[in-house]
Length: 335
Image (cartoon, rainbow, N blue to C red; front, side, top):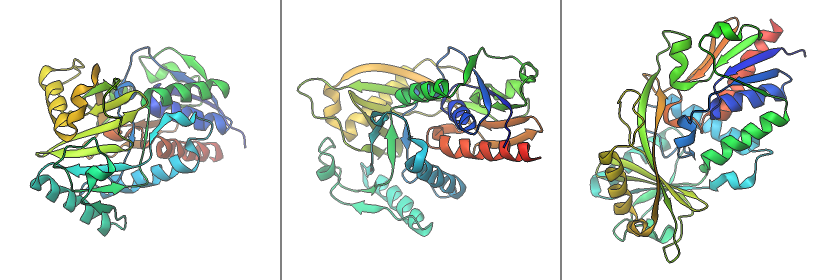
């Protein structure tokens, strides 16, 4: 089947995943990207549809589970094995109210046909946890990836497939020499296509580095509810990523004292031993959010597709998004 030329606007995990899939299908692809570090640089890299699920978000759960299957059934092919940093999630509660919230999620997941395994011995699984933490559930099929290593590996694969890099554009008209354009530039998409319901939501993330003499890095992703707030600890080869705050503050990407303090307080309440780790990095990024938290993936007109609005699920939904765009491209070729 004859394919054409494709311009992808955006060089984060979504843009690169779309570009790689299209190149594998025979498209001539170029990616317009900036040197700025976007949301993909700051992400935790969790592939966690169960542990991030919440009643009322059934559609997001469904596409998240489909995308997790794609991660496991081919999306990782050709990528370095070390990009995967965890192969299970442990979701825990600090107090009784938090434990009740976890039971709500577990009951909802079971009702959707996706039961999780409850535990009352969470600290036996992860000795880093505080002594009083017992209740939780395990999501045994979830994964975590090193976000920065994954983006670098996807870029290398794209180059090997013949994808070329191009500077950013100020208008979709600048890509009209390509047969099709895909908008995959996150919070900047409305500037190119006015009316897209995308808004930036700030999230702060910390990187804690293991030091000699400290307790070992956890083997699983640890997600916790701490007096109603959520915090996650994601393993990395040299430590853990701690995240993430979430609030709307325009395009401000400066880590705030209060945000960093809350993350450290919550992380150390869940795992007190983290207080001995090195505070290696504080960063903030802007998640591209939609009103209903479901991403916008599909066709805008005959020559323009969109893949934006992934919010907190950009890494999880990258394979699903790439497949959806590939299907739209195939329809366009057949037409």
